[in-house]
Image 1 (cartoon, rainbow, N blue to C red):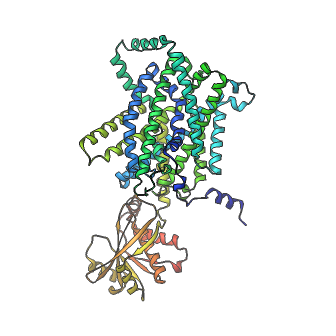
Image 2 (image 1 turned 30 degrees about the vertical axis):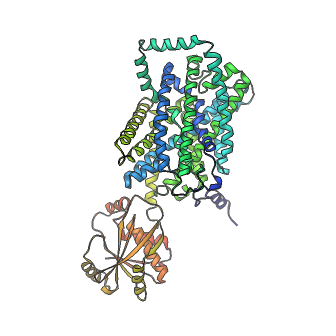
Image 3 (image 1 turned 90 degrees about the vertical axis):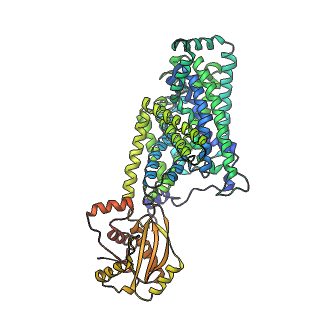
Length: 636
């Protein structure tokens, strides 16, 4: 009988070994998958106009024009390239990892994961807070005698709990539900904005004239000064750029051509590009029109904290001009799409962490399971909500920072891929990289809250990652060993006696001297010796690997050669394989390293070699608890 503790453990770690994959039967049309991206991208319309007005004031519409230009002629080309280079949803982070190999790439990825975590976590908390804001400030709900519906913090925490509970039970991204939510929300938003343009701005042209005169008066009647200031202010509206990384992340769900293959999914890439440009055009139109309507039609005081348009500018227009009942329907649709945006962000986090950290050796093995991560992310969301007091405006800076850093990394990755292309292509992507770097820098300087919370995530990831890597340093890590024909012949010839392997550093060709030293130090016959050399590949890698061993005869000496990320792990895996293959206990002979042992331990952790003998023995001890079955390690 299993104990309660064992049952809970099995339930928590369910699916730990399953790998994320999408079958063709689960794929769908690009425009429907666009709606899955849209629950994150389009839902930002609910709070973006209000944040934009607080950031740019009456300049908000002009700053939005600059943002739209950057979206269509900056973000879209960058993510076209990202989609072409990562058709399986890896995104810009994977591009940079491949372009910057080794520890530099790993550290860069860890930093980007911190910002990506900021992006996704704040998406969850900000969306829940804004959904609560729409419900709490709804006139009909205010008349109900339910305390929970009158308290934004409590309602936000409740929404987060429901979201976490659904993922604990098991959640599949429902494209059909996303299509309904997105089109219903966009249709209602379009009704509100068209009503504002046709029946209020066009019939009250003096409102537009007054706005323009105020704009010029505030900037000394200079149109160029106004345009220039708008170019400087647009980074504050960066929330309108969210959603592109999610658009690439959902690529595996996009249906391609029938003749597509996993290695060459040309149809999927083409359809994803349709998804990206269509979403960008729709969002740009809504951002531009909503900025004009909200800036001109809503009194400035209503945007302030506690005002009726605080975090819900378009909903304010719905209640003001289309009535309470229509406004209530809009509030409910907004709350639903915001809640689903949190679900999309949670799904993104659950695919992001298992893809990188366990493979880097920088997370415990249980991080591959969904439920422990859901609990952790939900608790983090509670903490972030509490710190920001469930305030939409306050969380906007942190959200914008996460979005912009990830997009800047995509621009950098795109530029690096053009280094061998034409000069025009290089200059274009270099200019886009500068623009995104400027946008990120301005946002960071003026709203440092974002970099503070991102730094916290980065620090936590770094500390836990390297702690985990140290704790897991004595794992076997190699799941398969294969020998070529020559190596097999060496082993078969020696398997009738005692199999004796002598570790030899690659690059040192004096096998005779090494053989003589082994005879003296270890008291073995030179005829028994088989040298084994392990060449370090990329010591920063950690994931399960295959060890391919080749045999080579150099003079009269037999040499086994292989490549691995760490010498002790490769030696231990090879010894266990030879034991199982020959049914005899093999013996490994190594020399002591001279110098400070702590320095050599650090060298092993970072470079994969150093204190080889004791580490190899410890790996073997953990892999084979029975001393009588354990390969022998000799040091002299």
